[in-house]
Image 1 (tube, one colour):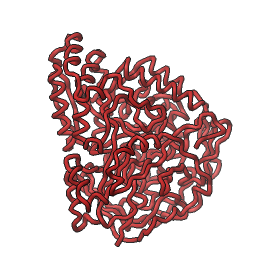
Image 2 (cartoon, helix red, strand yellow):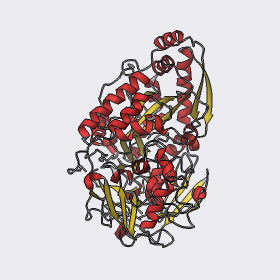
Image 3 (spheres, one colour):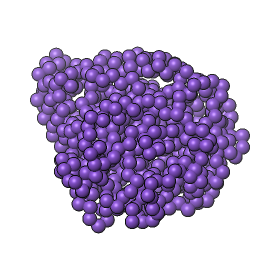
Image 4 (cartoon, helix red, strand yellow):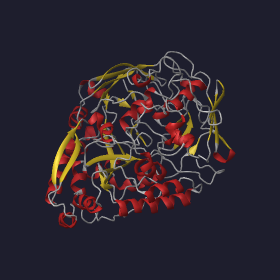
Length: 600
């Protein structure tokens, strides 16, 4: 992403007609390639093609060595926002996914090779999963030697506990795919285990079975060909069964299983990662442990981290940012700097930056349409780095999703990049709401503050009376995810969890999923949309399903308009001169933390 956090937040299965699509890789480099904007469409399209499920051999560690990699030293990390959650089940914001890749492990993961090709492999499991019964049953076997950072072996009881605790009421911000597939759509799954496993209850063995310490079996009522993708998400990373799961306090001291563990965390100030001595590289097909650790400090706006990394002095030579992009106002300066321009990673991200319109408060579509026409998408893109930060969006499906239609633009944002204030003003007049107060929330970052100036000016010109409300960036999605958030409009970025529209439309626009922490930020609860989501979700032919998702997407955008599309995002990241192994990860959508090392 650029200078904001997004949620998302990602094999063809020949045996199943539903051999669904997921991300493939496009690696980003530095130097001249970093200036090649013509690659954007190709890079985006490459991420919408199928990713294969890996075999046991492909899931076996250690991960292939990174060229010229050396061990030792500490990598410095400049971050804008502190981590709002450390409990993996609460992790759904993209900067948290970077951290999760270093400290947590789940049953599966995405592995990327040097060419950018990705494979879903077994992480804690021996492979990406053994499917039977037409996709209704999936069996996983744990690898030998996988442990938590305290040395406790990871067993099937821990994996069962990991899944079951996501049913608990205090888990509100993480993914819900697996819970819904096991126990019911929308929020109905909570009824299957309302207290999670904490009062001694468990899901029936006919739903989730652990016949021995090494085996986990998922039983679904319907085929679920996409389970290996879902299980790779940080939200399903292993949490130990027992006293160390402190329930709603687990955010304070999570138990790690990746190559690094959290040595200290001062919220809003700093975090220190050190080597997890109980991580065995022979069990891990994707991660390395080259650096001795990571020293992370927060409150670095993009301008600050960019200036430090471009200057490349002292500790900055050993520095990166997990998620800060090059500051938009400094992009040209960095690209023109011969020393900095060779230290860049870029990539086309899967996010659509959109203006959510709270449908509990903005019930008249004419008002929502007026807001959409008034928004100056082109100016907003310029604030976010121009062509290096993104492209004007016409719809709510990103170019990285199967089914994306280039040129789809029902509100004329491509032809009128500065908005259409007169059309917006007329719609507002027709609605009888000229001068209407509009409570607009935005986060307290440099880019969002600059963006707010542009947006408020455009909406006021269209006849609104905009009331600005600044919100802390670190808790942005938690605040916007509240059903009663008190705001009329607010921007979010949503990206597919894998490159299928089923990971965009249901989580974002299904009215049956509305609850605190839900990603249905507009609170759309349209009967046709809800019923179509239920119908399409049952289709097993991926081509047919994709076509149906596209039709439903058009209905949502044109007939309901819960969120105005603003832009599709890209990232351009800078790193210090002593950093080796820097590349773009199409799964994480940032610089890949798993391949980094210090050259000397």
